[in-house]
Image 1 (cartoon, rainbow, N blue to C red):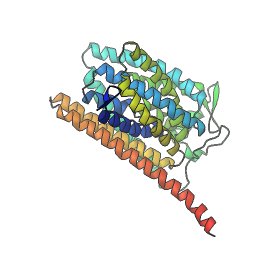
Image 2: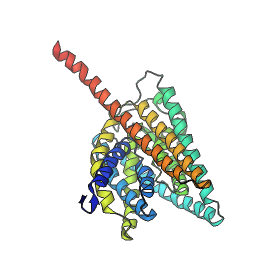
Image 3: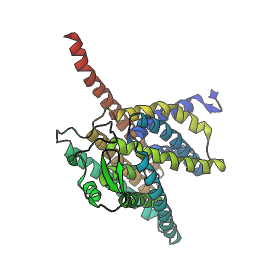
Image 4: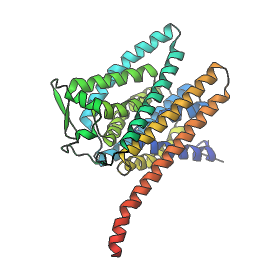
Length: 347
């Protein structure tokens, strides 16, 4: 049985997959193309269709998730625009480096190794820092961060405090009540864009931790601001692919139907789940992603296509595991918040 030219089973699969990814996308500000494109490739779609449809999905999901983060006061538009400018310049330089490696025949191996090391390195660092911070009962940052609310120095990573200490005019006031030199913001944005352009990825898994650990932006605001950036990068990318007919609406529409709910649930969860938990889930997601990419590259090297399927299974399993943990944590927090109210009513 078919509906809109696609089988009902595949339609349901795409919708469920969209819900899953939407939760991750809204919660972390990353995960869309990282999951969708490999899945479509394994399913037999042409590479340009897989990439183009993945970008179109990322664009739609990022719009939905950004609107929810905006409602929660978790988007710093000024910082987002500055990051877009710096990131765009970095991506162009990164692409030049990638093209040079392609010219000398080293692009595939160098990018693969760098991607695994970066995913694994960031994942290990974020997880270690989150677990170390989880031993502290200070409570962490507030989720709803006002423009004028002061962030305690203890809540800001040491590297970010060092970067904030460089008082090179002009200084920019950011959400959370602190100021950072414009040049420091642009330098961080350029560096993340450079890595993004060199690796050929969207860069959400690079930008989100960079906003927190290097600039000092509270994690929920880092997620919301990163999503704001992805609206522009995903929009431009999907438009360019759509012009060449590489966006398959029979894929994108059911994915977006599922993610419309998932992205809002994931974004809402950032206002409920403890900040240290957000960082732990993010780190675990990246670590499993690094394992999956490493397995895929080993499969390519030794000519074992079955390892591509194993890699995809690990990515999908990680997505299911982490989105389930996010949903469970959010429900648990809601239940804990409702309990005192119930007890008070009973008294």
